[in-house]
Image (cartoon, rainbow, N blue to C red; front, top):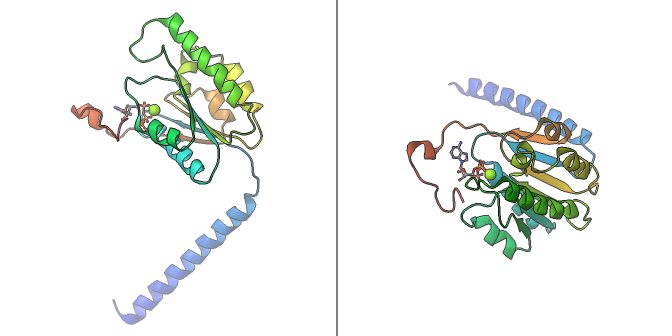
Length: 203
Ligand code: ATP
Ligand code: MG
């Protein structure tokens, strides 16, 4: 390319960037509202809970008060719990009951209800800035927790409180209420090729 052509390309690039910057600046100027958000991370791909925990880590890094409620008890302790508890994040984990392995519906419902009662307290607590409800969507799919009660508690939470909800198949009314919704799509997953869950990556 000749010098003249290079100069022309560079000028075109600069103009394009300037135009993008103006549009972005305009959108930033337009977004002036400050309030708590409801964020939903749903879909079949990997990355929902890790996104939720990543946001909790981000919030804690800014000195915000965060809480995590885990609606499905894994068979192993996840790494983020150890780290975040040490950073002062409160954890509420379904002690007994629901895992993919249990087949005792009554026990699962009781366990879900117990954790939901604690969740409701958090949703009234002005001192909690961010809450992650990890895998909450399943409790609604199975009707272990009443959808209207959840919608009510979310709507009446402190104005500046952020809530993150993760899990597959999020109910449409939660999606409608939410401010930001991402659906993680699975393109491929190592597990399908026989690779077992890896410490530090999958749990
Ligand atoms: P992560 O906790 O890694 O962000 P996730 O929250 O998106 O995953 P879940 O449905 O909660 O996904 O499942 C948690 C576990 O299942 C993780 O070990 C994850 O790697 C694995 N997993 C997630 N998506 C898939 C998939 N599409 N196929 C197989 N395994 C998956
Ligand atoms: Mg998950």
